[in-house]
Length: 101
Image 1 (cartoon, rainbow, N blue to C red):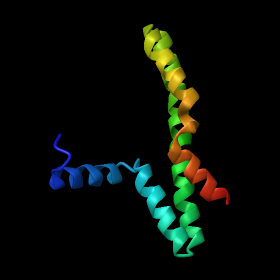
Image 2: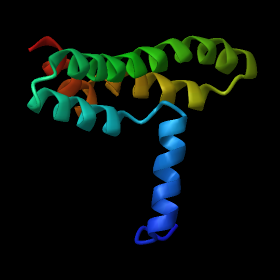
Image 3: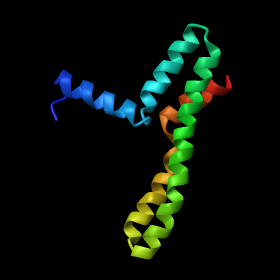
Image 4: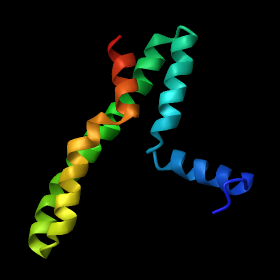
């Protein structure tokens, strides 16, 4: 993928926004609302980022039984390592700090 191609980049961002899984946009939008003094709207955006992380955690429950049923232990161990690091991501920290402060 050509990173300098504006059309492809625009389409990629459009699809991410349509999928409602675009944390960087929600974080930047929340920061903008915060700077404008619209604290309610900012708080809503920051909580949306936290909800994405909660959804990711919830989705892992189905993966536990799938891995054990299909005997894909390597994928299972990788998922457990990912889950251990999930809430250490910078997006989560920024959204949590803004939502609580």
